[in-house]
Amino acid sequence: MPEFGQSLEAVRLRRIYQELAAYRWSIEVGGITYEGVPHATDDRSKTLINGRVAAMENGSLPAPVEWKAADGSTVTFQTAAEFNAFANAVARHVAQCFQAETFVAQELQFAADPRSVDLEGRFDSRFTILKAQ
Image 1 (cartoon, rainbow, N blue to C red):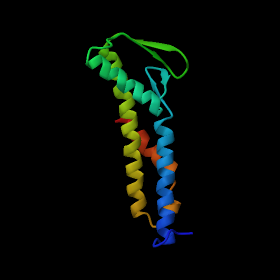
Image 2: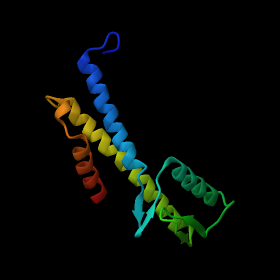
Image 3: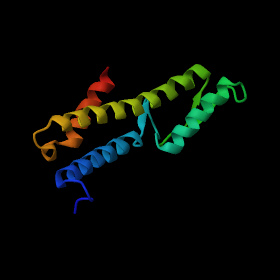
Image 4: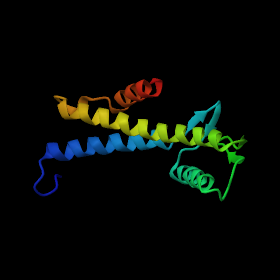
């Protein structure tokens, strides 16, 4: 049932955007492989990564950095530059997720029937292109 004052089409379109956002989130927090090792990219992991970068920048916690990977192994980043490169890879992954979502959302605006758009397929396609750049 549409919310008061909204058409059924508007409600359907909002749900499609919500599905797209949920899919983006699942990819965003699904992790990355960095230098052959799987790493978590859930919100807690991203917070810990950013905190460690800040601690290295202010000198309170210098390198080396012992980091627990998603497979349970421990990775040692010997220098701040090495850890920053890893942190940047995580940030790039997150940014690419949002870029892919925005791209598909723009496609939805121009689709004759937004319900016919393969959200996951279009997202994955755009995400692959972004990762290759």
